[in-house]
Length: 302
Image (cartoon, rainbow, N blue to C red; front, top):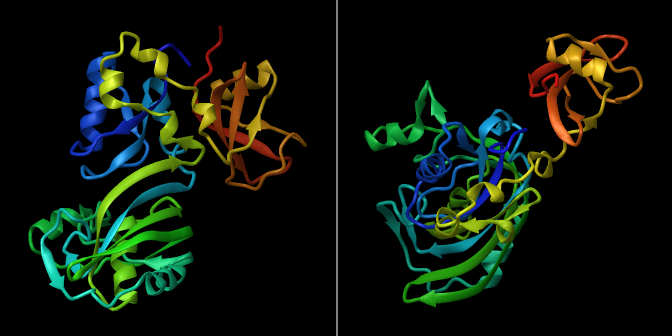
C-alpha cells in the first residue's frame, strides 16, 4: 500500500449523508478513489469507515464484523420510514407501557431472527431501490431476511405524555436494520414505534472512540496521518504469507498450490500477506491438492 491508501475512521455528524463525507474526503486528500464500508443515514451519527486509494478494492471485505449501536426508541407513534424523519402513520397511547414489558419483547428479537427491511431502504426490488418505489407511493412487500442480534438491551425508560421513550443498545450482524428492530419492538408490545436517534459505536474491532470528528479531520494540516492499515479491520479472514515466487505467480493471475499451509474449504477467502501488508486476496479452489486462485492483487514486483 502507498501513502494515500488506508482506512479513515470518521465520527459522522448528524445531518450529512455518508456520500457527503466521502466527497469531503476526496476534496481534502485530492484523490478520487474513496468509498465507505456501511452507510449511515443523515439523522445518524457515529463511526463511518472510509476507504481511500487502493483500499477501496477491499470494501467488500471490510466492515463485515458485527455492528454496535445506541439510540432511542419512541413508543406510541409509527412512521412510514420507521424513524423520526418519516411521516406519522399510526398513533396510540403508550401511557400503560413499562420497561419490564419492553425488555421482555427485546429478548424475542435477540438471536437469529427474521426481519423485514423498512419500506424506505436501499434494498433492491426488481432492479430498483425500495426507497425510490416508496417515494412514488408504491407499496411493495419486501421479503424478510435472516439477521443476527447478539444483544438488544434497554434502559432510561420514561414517559413523555402519552408516549414512552427508552434508550437502547444493539449489537447485530451486517444487514440488520435497527429502525426495523424499533418498529418490531413496538409491535411486540402492541404499539406503533419508531427510532428517534441512532449512533454507531463500532464496526467489528473499529470503535468510534478511535475515530476523529469530521470537522477536526477537515481542519488537520496532515489529514493523511489519520489513515490506518486495513489489516486492522479485515477480521475473520485467515492470513497466508507465501514465498516471493508464489507472490509472483499470483500477481500473474496463476492458481497456486498451498499444500498443508492452509486448512480451508473451497470458496473460502484468504489474505495473502507480504512484508506486513495485504499483497492479494485469494480464493480456495475445489481441487486436490489444495490451491488458491487470486481474486484481487496489490503486490507488485519491486
